[in-house]
Length: 174
Image (cartoon, rainbow, N blue to C red):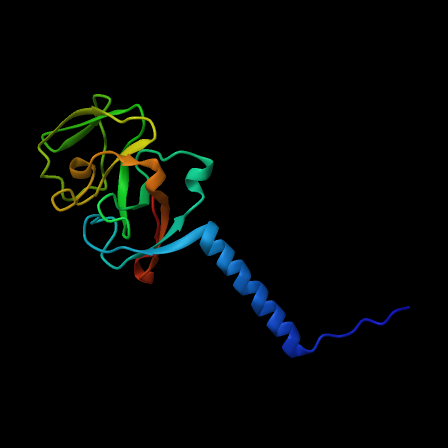
């Protein structure tokens, strides 16, 4: 019967550490990533310097849905990532009348809004295939699809699903 060599404590620790680092790298690269919110365009939902977890596989499996919060490559500065809420998806018609968003002619409920009064009018526009319409929750100061147009789905990095820092704001995002 062959004898098993026992691993030394140091070697076992090193192997465990290497495996943990490789797994962390793979998960961060392909599955989840932390994103720091910069700015106030998503108030009151997200605050400046909040940290959120982003599911990078969410849209490899499915498509963005109205109401989801997404992180995407800025259409203005490709070196930056921005965070906004999906308001309309391909094939839907979006418009704004008297600061109220309409999707396909129906009022879109936005209980998350605190700062609504700005975009009095945005003409009805149909979202083309492969694009989405995004808005910040803090409409008076948000630079979003009202200004840069429809966002190509190919720019989306992932779906924000959890505020994890600061701990007193820890919660799931809807």
